Length: 157
Ligand SMILES: CC(C)(COP(=O)(O)OP(=O)(O)OC[C@H]1O[C@@H](n2cnc3c(N)ncnc32)[C@H](O)[C@@H]1OP(=O)(O)O)[C@@H](O)C(=O)NCCC(=O)NCCS
Image 1 (cartoon, helix red, strand yellow):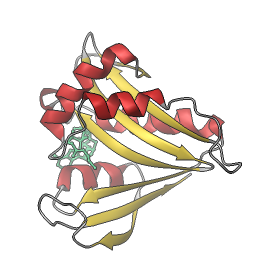
Image 2: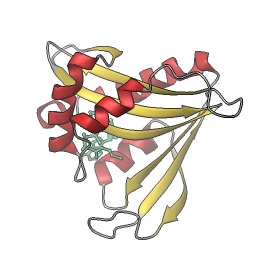
Image 3: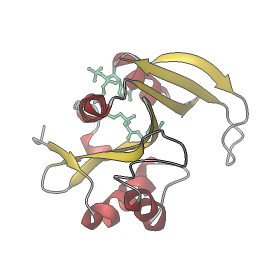
Image 4: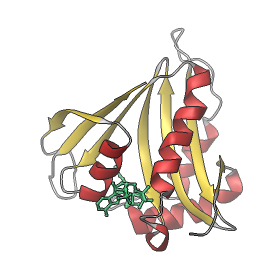
């Protein structure tokens, strides 16, 4: 496996992540979505007193090969997008992104992670279960493109 490092998302990474999203996600975030996400990084508070923020971790060899983006609200976070380049899959990159995300979130006081995943997405469900996510429910008809349901999953620290 090509050795990868894990690091924060930089603005200069956005075209590469948008290209990976196109390969990974049936309803991909484009560069505008990613710029909007990144421009809120480091927000410290919402209208109440909850700390909020955006956290993204990238796997990088000499090019970006994987990414995960999460929203943080108080002590909870939600994974918004996650993907690994097709030619780098089944080499532990997805798992290392999730573990590193936890390492970034914990010092921010965030110990609970949520996500939604397509019912048919066997690889992602296997990955999430493998690192300790548990199914907590089903949202029927959640995905606008196919009408497929979403499994809701939770990772408790
Ligand atoms: C899901 C995804 C991120 C997995 O990334 P990855 O780097 O291949 O995952 P890893 O190599 O870290 O896999 C860790 C474990 O997850 C499980 N897993 C991952 N891919 C799997 C597959 N295709 N089939 C079955 N189990 C799989 C296995 O248990 C694996 O451990 P093992 O290889 O020792 O058996 C990748 O397939 C992907 O980018 N898919 C498209 C985007 C996507 O579905 N994102 C999630 C949206 S919610």
